[in-house]
Length: 568
Image 1 (cartoon, rainbow, N blue to C red):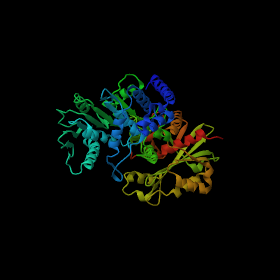
Image 2 (image 1 turned 90 degrees about the vertical axis):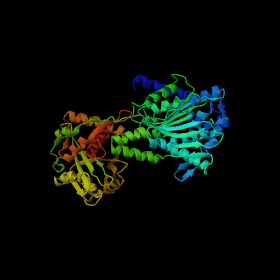
Image 3 (image 1 turned 120 degrees about the vertical axis):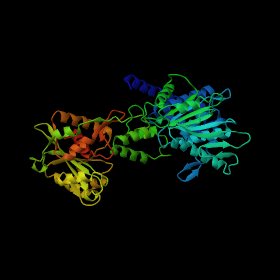
Image 4 (image 1 turned 90 degrees about the horizontal axis):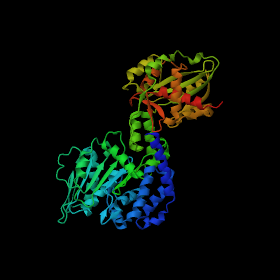
């Protein structure tokens, strides 16, 4: 994105926020349609920081269309009534659900505007994160067409894969079977539902991109699920070009972001955004887009709430917290999944090589903590395994005469976890060479690590002990009980926290002012580490593969972070 494009979006954010702040929501009499519309529109209009640019623009556009066409309260309430009397699958089995305010807004945007007896909106895009319940709720659109659309209505659910297409269709089948349990009015099969009523020949069908029978269609409603994954738009084109004779056709794209930049949806998304920005006019399109604003940090809970309006409804904040922890811990692929599926932004792995094992070997020197003179100031950082892999403890020492840093890292692993471990042979070799300390038991013995850290204070003066606040509670309590509480410092494992240490460490390596102890595990960790960048160009080392380890790299950078913020 160019600086001009960024400036335009920032200005658009200011402009729409000001416009909405000056709106009198009561003047639109949305309460006469449904109180949830008032609730949603008022919330977006009154909280610019809590809602993204595209969501704000969608609300502005809704109000402008309401001025132009009015809101057809009868059609909106008719659909709301249908929806809230359908039975959808849930964690407690089939059950009814009330529309949430954001869902009420979405469906009112589709059904609310009419002109000369025809529905204005004919294409809708719901671009929302995973766990929004978009696939389930959109099934109601097909049920509505089956029951109340044209007598010969043809509704189709499509997706890039058969499994994905059937997710939506299975919900539709469940709704129809509940409405017609004896099968008198509708025949329900695996991929087709057909009306048996004398006054209707309506049908619904599940299609995939490789479906053979696409000729002779006369679609009235089309639901394309997870369209961001599609590599071409062949199926969508076949379906939409068959709608020519329909008075009120409806095409709905429901999707979460992906890494498929060369697919049709990425270009369509830019078009939807252009529409919302006012680059062109087309009242027949409704787009509801949820993604972070420029400058929103991906580790901020406020960002998560902004991109997912159903946090607390269909998904909990704790789910987001845990998924982000997993993404930080498990490397680039996991972070890519978090960004695309839960942040709802198009992303790709932006990994680049960093220091590597060869350069790490060049800066390795013999280093024995017991032989250091003068008990110099030092930082200590710990990265703990959760159960059966190795943990790392780094000591960072600043040498004033040479203005250089030395980092000594020790590694620990539970002996009982060796048999059958994917890296058993390698770990045994390291243990035999004295590079890896084996603790007794099947899981890491934190007492050994605590004793090792406390023993370090005899060789160096520990200024701070850095730890990951997400997974160090037991060790922190043990260190605190041993008298180290005042030097314990949490170091968040986010991209923003690591950017400066990464740059400082790399500069120190290239200028000959950083050295590490000659432990081959250090070289192994640096060989596994690549830099990954977030949306704000912050960076952090991540693993090339999920099975690899970079713990020593992380603890050394944590030491650098501690040095950079330490106040003497």
